[in-house]
Length: 185
Image (cartoon, rainbow, N blue to C red; front, side, top):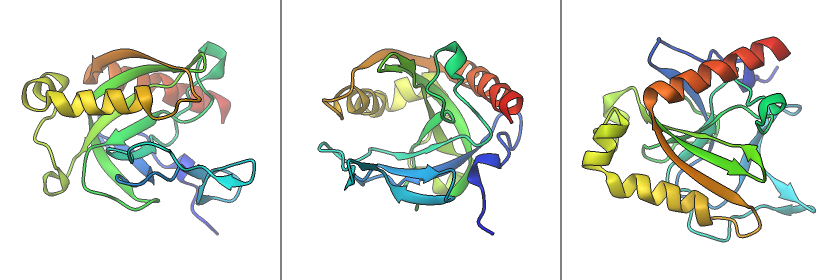
């Protein structure tokens, strides 16, 4: 029986979360975890692999398990998304992470926030910052790269970037999405 990544625990501690990697940093392939087959597959549009015709993903992209961005309140109906700043990790990796910020986005009229994280394991980190303030001080261009990537990576999507919020707001949003998942399941 294959593992169902959607049902992994959301929180490891009160300040760290589990992250499931779907898309390794450095690829242009739009890889998604499929709920029914329980596999990580390149998403298809009209039978053709979805490849981002832009720069590759600047960080590992995935989701927080056991969460739901509730469509009833404007969410996209998927688990809350994550950008994990670390070296490339393969699809299916589950990693303990520290939320440092969240990029607020609206994609095609739906809330599509991205939690920005670093690995909890210091040996896996590529940046040394554990808050939005530290990221702004030490790595402001990294945040700018991520923001610009989401703003311009897909000319066919209408994305409105609302800006960054700090870790406490990110954790609060994760808890809201965790509760929505619990209610639905």
